[in-house]
Each structure stands twice: as structure tokens, then as C-alpha cells.
Image (cartoon, rainbow, N blue to C red; front, side):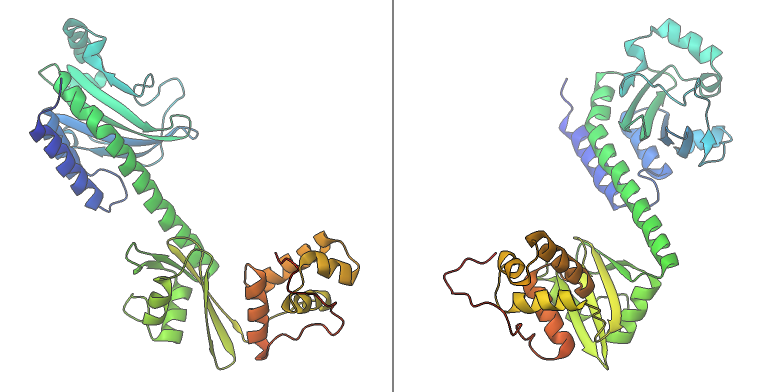
Amino acid sequence: MTLRSRDLQAVLSFVADAHDADGPEALTTELLDRLAELVGCEFATYQTFDWQRRVVTAYVPCSNEGERLELPTYPDSFWEASKPPHWTGGAFRKLSDTCTRRERELMRDEWEYNAVFQVVDWIGFRVGDRRTRSAWLCFDSQHRDLDERDREVALVFRPHLDALWRRSNMRRQVVELAAALERDESAIVVLAAGRGIDHATAEARRLLRDWFGTRNGRLPDELDGWLALASPGDSYSARRNGTFLTAQLAGDFTLTLRERAADPVRLTPREREVLGLVASGLTNAEIAQALWVAPSTVAKHLEQAYAKLGVHNRTAAVARLARAHGTPLAPAADAPETTPAESRP
């Protein structure tokens, strides 16, 4: 059976509205009411689970269910290992596929849940991983057997629910990360898709205010213009009154800010010597030969210098150290001579 175009349009319209919602869970009571109407059943219920801890982490009913049942307190509603909270076989099930109408009517009269809601048929499906975390959406019918059209509606919606569930988990992770960073006094900015500010820690807001006068929750023009061309790993620096501000694009949506003294560099003499030879154009192998050390030792000195300077490559390290001192980094006096024909890394 193929769904009618109006059914597909209704599903797609619902999915668009669900993606616009920004609540803590993927589905709300209002959205579940719309799903129940779309399927043509009396009840729609959405739950999320932590299987390792065996707790229900969220329970969202439709309006009809909420009016009939005093719901338990969630999250952290524990279940016994021998009594899982929902069908735990396949990831998708339609009750009338395996039970006759007579069998389902007996269940309705004997099972506590069905006795309250008078359910004679249901379709349920799971997204996520039952070994760790998952979500379960169920449609319950009081009177009619759910048919193939209802099955196809559920199957069409299932991948969209998976995306909505994962998106809600990501929102929760961002909130938890931001809360942890607030406690750690780190300066982190979570960027919105349009390069605006989705979230900024208290320390990040302070730095933006002190350095750019930003108070309206928007990125300053200087950073916004830089981000338009930046790639993850790139850095932006500003200097004022003997202090540096460094902004680094740590990922597609994460900006880190750091304020420090203009010359915070604490390189060892050997690290400075290695960078001096880098500035003169030597390769790691040539530096190792000049210093009578192994190439791996040179690489280690450079790695440590990069971390201290807040950079990721040779050119940036030399430039960063030169800016810290206000003059180009002088090559070592005893650097061996090289020719342009020699290869460079």
C-alpha cells in the first residue's frame, strides 16, 4: 500500500513543526495530539530510557492520556530487570500482526494499562540503542484495528523521530556542557548556525564586553568578519594595554576565548633554539643534525612549543613568538647553510 499524497504532506508538515520546537524532549503533548489525530487513534505516548541504569528518563503523554492517568514522577522512574517498560523484541511492532482480535480483547480486560485505557490494538517503535539509551513512541487504539495505512505512517515517521530524538540529546549535551563550563569559569561561545551566539558562558560574556563592548548577545563585527573565513583550528588575536585576547574556532560551532599577558611565553632555551632554526628555514632533520639530537626530539620540542604558543604549525609558531616580542625571531647564529633546492616539510 502506498500512502496518499495528503498523508505524506501531513507527515512532512508535522516533522517541520517538530524541528522548530526547542523543548527538552523531541516531542511535546501538543505534538503527540497531532500525531494521534494523524494516525487516527486515541492515544500517543513518547518515552525515553536509560537502559544501563534501568530508568525512564522522560514520559510525555498526549492530552487524552494525561486526563485519565495519574502519571508517575519522571525522570529516574526505575523498572525491574524482569519487567521492562515496553515491548523489547524488535524495534517495530503492530500488536494485531501477532494477536487476534479475541486475544487482544482478553488483554484489554486483564492487563492493568489496557483496562484503564481499553486498548485493543497498538503500534510502537523504538529509536536509539536498547543497550544504552533509546526512545519509544506508541499509538494506541481503543476501538478499531490499526491497518496498513497506519503502519506506513509510523514507518515514514520513524527516521524523522530518530533525528528529532538525537537532536534533543544534542541540545541536552550542550546545556550540560555549558553548565559545567560555567562552573569551571571557562570562556566558551556556542555559535548558532548563522554565526550568532547560541550560548556563551559568563566568562565569555565578560571578555566580549570588556574587549568589544558587546552587550546585546551578538558577536562583535571583528569576530563575525573573521569567522566568515575561518576554519576549525584557526585563531584570532587582539592586543591591548599589554594583554592578548585569543579566540580559537575549536569546531564548527564552538569558539574559545582566552585572555593573557602579552608575553606569557615560557619556552625553554632549547625550544627557543629550535624555533630559531625553524625561522631560518631548516627542516626537522636538519635541526636534529645541527643540535646533535634525534628528529623525534626536535618534533617533541616543537609540539611543546606549539602548545605553549597556542598554535598548530611551524609558521604560526614563529609568527606568534615574533609578535610576543615585537620583532622578527632571529635565526640562530650557528645555523648551517642551506640551499633553495633543498626540500622543506
